[in-house]
Image 1 (tube, rainbow, N blue to C red):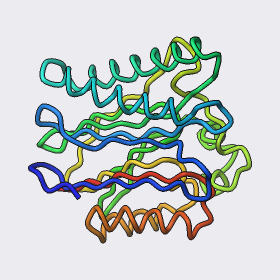
Image 2 (cartoon, helix red, strand yellow):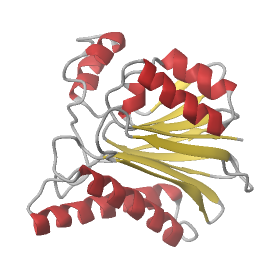
Image 3 (cartoon, rainbow, N blue to C red):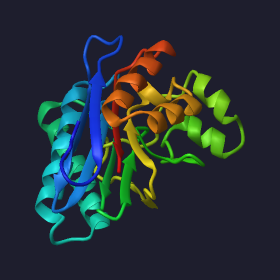
Length: 239
């Protein structure tokens, strides 16, 4: 677990029941900010693990290069656009269709969080009173937003993994940007191998109860206990 100045954080990734882990993550610091990201290579697409690693590497490199001279929201947008362009170029050069989700956060020393999302990896802010998380960009989430199905029904829906956005599939990319305050809460970023299976109440209980390293281990165990069949990646950070 990180013990340097700033947030205490830990990260953990597990292949789960899959033969290969197509998730990738980064957790560190750049220009006085904490930086975190989780990417999940798309199953059913060739070389998802390449796409996820490219996305995380480019996010990390971009924050290191630009955070000292640009606003965090602009850095996130630049990182996502550059990652998308790089994966698209890789696909053209190799005649494949690699793609990935990406949820990433830049956190200031005061606890302000700039968050970017494409796909269905999530960033959470969990406090004793509330749970906030980014909106999944999926077909099933669109059904929930339209009141066709409930959030509980969405977790069991057979088409819950159909994405409406991902990095690497087209030249243009629509990035959802959020600005939230950590405000004494816990930041969690996860691939859908966690939140498609473990309940929100279980996730909340674990991240509020445990230090980051233990919380990461317990979250992965909770996902597997809930019959997760996917790769599982989590980052937990708290003041």
